[in-house]
Length: 405
Image (cartoon, rainbow, N blue to C red; front, side, top):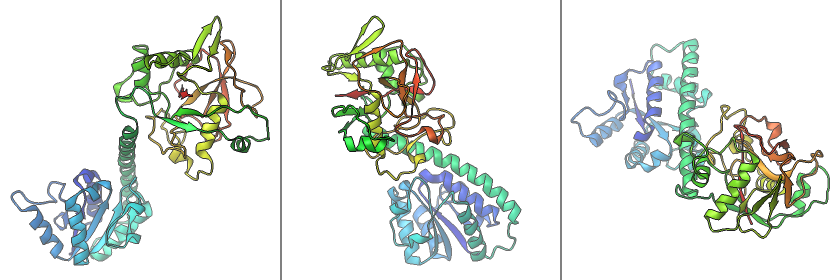
């Protein structure tokens, strides 16, 4: 019987282990499987690693390539891939998401590659291995389907973990760990764009250009600014701050501004909050500013909603760390989904008209919140969607992001 060589990065050993489980399920003998990262399937103690690999690839061998970013960073894996091409072995390239087909490099035909969580391709792999190895006792279909379902569940857990890790790494490169403010995106409003996102042509007061934070305010940033007003698990420091009233969000803007030597934007006068347009500090977006920023990022954007937003279908009914989904076209994260966001705007009954900018708002009036949350259904995830909350309202799925002029 031919042998099966599993070429992979040691950082992907969990996926290699799943491939071994599949091979053994379809009755490939353990002695015919080489997988360097698993005990009992690799190089015996005292043997030369490279010589052992060379020996295996010199024989008639089926090669399974587990392709990922880790694979292409591994010199040994790349040597194995080259040797596979030279020896013209039968090769099965398998992709580990979020790695993509476009990222594949090498001299084997990329049309043969498939994602490891493709249930149909897993069955094709089983059938191909059985044929090439002339497996005498094929696994019954019912047993295979049950086994495959369990394997797919295991794979989804591993892939989700991989996606979170990769996204967090990328996010932390753009948002330094020691930063006390998030990074910002410059927004230049255009009247045509505003008209495109409204159901009717309306005369809407145009805001000046502004910069909006790429992410919602995190628990870490809130804690560093406000002190011990909240208790949270350090593992959740990159989650958005929630359970914050509109009044507390206003106070945060003032305190963050002053901590950076900027003039505070808000002043309280009895039961009213007054905004000073000449302030140099950080503030809440008005409804129209928030809507323009969101719509600008979605304009002619073909990215599927599930890749941009955490909502009822994919969130697991909890908030997620900021920036772990793809950014919109403006480079902002989570404008839709994850958490609802406070605006510095009074709520109006007519949902077709966003609130006009005002410099003084009453604490007795309801305020606009935008964007939907991890609990929202798809119909709530659009730039125009709005709802209202009282100034002292708090919720596990309500927070805010900030703006600077």
